[in-house]
Length: 199
Image 1 (tube, rainbow, N blue to C red):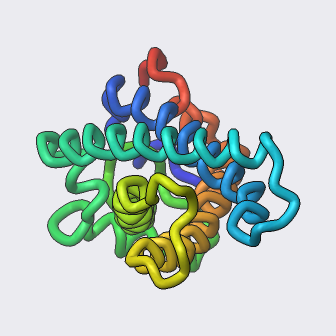
Image 2 (tube, rainbow, N blue to C red):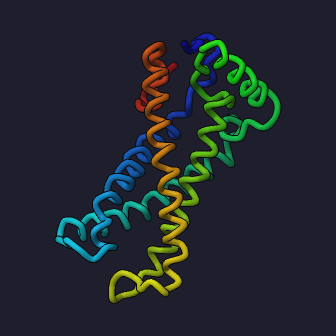
Image 3 (spheres, one colour):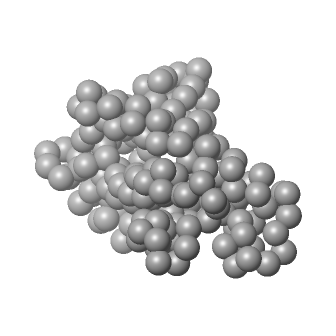
């Protein structure tokens, strides 16, 4: 069970807005990709798949913008930066404490504090950012006549993009599962979805 007494600082309001927007965009991207496979395999194409394809592309570009704002925020906010990269000081100590706590069946506290959740958040955001960057290049490499041919340079970022999508799916499911597990004992963690909520 989690320990609310050791919870970190409340997430900034602006960051909560980013989190909600980012969660919606990534979820849309992941699920739309599932129904786009027929386009690439050249069978069963219909207007719905093509609509998803274009929605996926433009939502991907919106995701790149949100990620740009996100990384700027991380750069400017020391507390948030230490949370996502807990490699020294109190955040690193929190990581050690969280690992020790898991051996005693104690979930890490929520909030901006670094530790194990921060480490996982940071690694996950790096993977998501890498996927967005490859998608960004794919957007501009798609030729006017349609989907790129197999020998086209487009296939390089596409293969990386496809590989990273598996890691993002793992992060997505793990992120939701851990949030729900924490919420069973401490609903305060769900305030990240309510930008107007206060500690």
